[in-house]
Image (tube, rainbow, N blue to C red; front, side):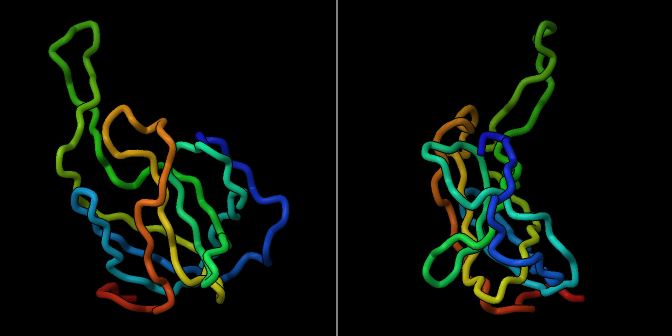
Length: 153
């Protein structure tokens, strides 16, 4: 993963013209799936489905009932755990500062795959300066209920 995008050599199926727009809300390390909305849109192709050992970074996967990966997307971590701020040091006018209690929301798009059962997040530790550590599963959400939640149209 490490910022390198490789598409799968063997696509599991033709790209779906339907997608799911997933809206998440987070506070600290708690992530909640707020809504699922079916939309007409083609999402980018899957990144390589095979995982490498000791991979760092952030990605999400669509899994089937048997926990097989159907789709993987490598991306920047949508949970903002650090911010670039001004420094009093004239030799280093900017520095990264950890956000103690990160909170916010984000949206992800996934293909609306009939066999899709869950979306799984993998991330390196969220603490500042640990983004190169091995990523682990941090959250899993059921995506079998379409058009759920508060989101309209």
